[in-house]
Image 1 (cartoon, one colour):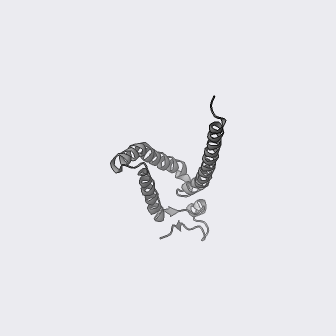
Image 2: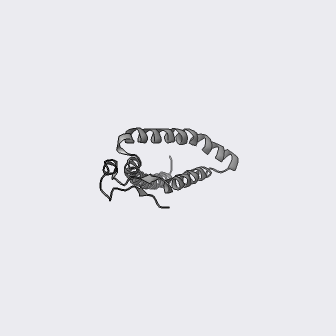
Image 3: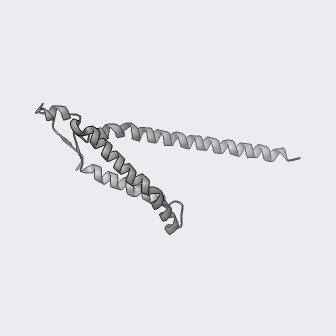
Length: 131
C-alpha cells in the first residue's frame, strides 16, 4: 500500500505546475493579443487604398513563408552548434532587431490615403516614421 503522503505531495506539485503553466499561457495570450491587435492597423496603413489588399497579402505571406519556414531549421542548428537550448532566443532577438530597423524608414500614410490621392486637404500628408 503506497504512502498517502507521496500522493498528496505529487498532487500539490501537479497543481502548482498547472497554475504556473496557466499563468504563463495567460501572459503569452495577452502579449499576442496586443501584438496582433495593432498589427492589422499598422500593416494596412503602409499601402495606398487601391493596392492595399495586394500589398498586405504579398508582404504578409512572403515574410511569413520565409521566416516561419526556416525558423525550425535555424533554431535546431543554433541549438546543435551552441550546445544550449536557449540559443533560439538569439534568433528571436535577431528577427526583432531586423523588424525594428526596417520599421524606422518605412513611410506611413497616417489614415489620409484617400484625401491625398484626391489632391485633398493640406493635413493629408504622408507621415514619416521616426528617423
